[in-house]
Image (cartoon, rainbow, N blue to C red):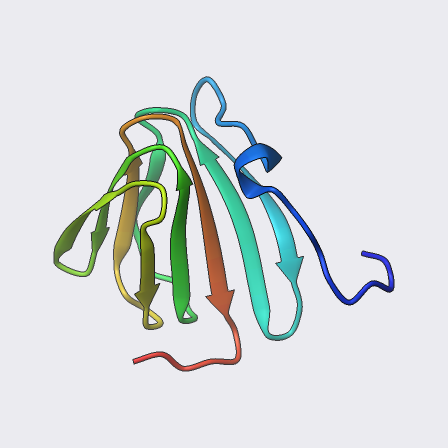
Length: 110
């Protein structure tokens, strides 16, 4: 990154969902925050796992079945999910999906 104090990105256009599986790019990774843009093919996703940090999931485009803890969530563009560290969650793309994941390395959400 250059010396600029900002980034401007069009997330819906940044990464296209692959024909199968997933792709990801790291948009930011510093001492406080890691931001990853994911793209999933329909049927792809992430099996249940936990993150070591508080996290935020944002669906940019497409539809996904998400689980957060014991709750099922229908993800669609505009869905925003905040989770404390170590919250079990999963993502299954029902259509091609673009999703933003923000890990808050120096925060504590409860």
